[in-house]
Length: 222
Image (cartoon, rainbow, N blue to C red; front, top):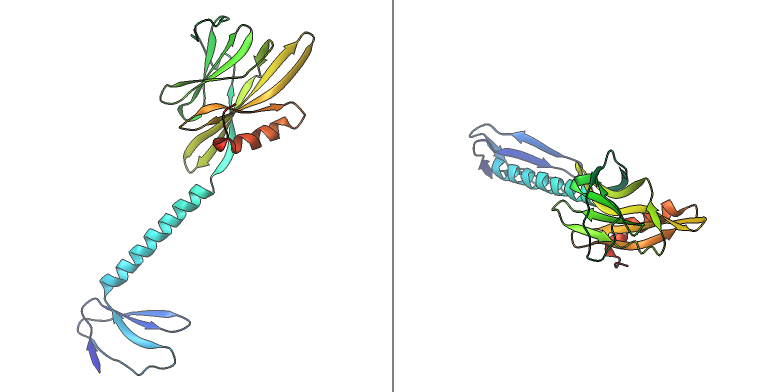
């Protein structure tokens, strides 16, 4: 039996160990040979070959995109809580709050900002999301307090994107001559920004706070 190949067709020889491609010239005739072992000879149009290649390339691209999503690295970015680099601004709060002077507005990653201020000599922090919404964090300090020198953002690095997922700030409490501290952990999601954990100072609180921050998205607000 003879088969006449169309222009720009490819002859593909399939063996167990390899696949060989041979381009046929226009109107070249080939002869089908009997099957030998598991190898045989057939003709596949070039358009079908290119479509198969296109599907393979699309599949590889989707695989690479998915791999990037599942292998996002989590790291820390820090915001200094002092002016400069922060800007001193008047801060307004809830009716009845006793405000102690101005606050500072500090730039964070990916368009987020922090407001740090004092209410009745107690430290307070608010997160400003990229859209401008303000989220007051309830630090629940029962004594005079202040903030540590910087805030730590836990962020996911996904290619060229930096996505904040949590915030950690140190709160220093004053009890007469005694001073204690804890790390306040807040989740940062599109739906909610709030305190989820308070980690007492034990010498390993930084590691514990980062672990809590990295899994804070599914936690309830405190």
